[in-house]
Image (cartoon, rainbow, N blue to C red; front, side, top):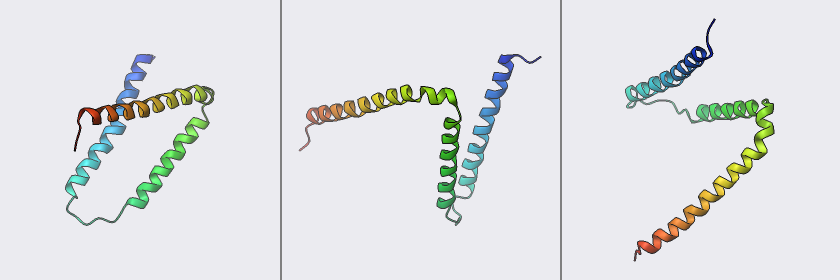
Length: 102
């Protein structure tokens, strides 16, 4: 019988392979074909991004635990975002005063 640690290690290895191999193939393809005239792929890339966003939304919507925790996670995310924006503004203003440019 396979252990839980063995399954996790196999899952991590497969996940790594599924992510790294396409990345390496893409980088090599882009490097080898960088000087060639290629068809525009913006529309296809946009369609793929839309499909990925839909898939993410579907996964969130079908997970009852995540849906139950969404208000708390959303509130925490909102607080983090607001604080990041406020502190960015404060530090930019302070930096401008310290580095007085004319």
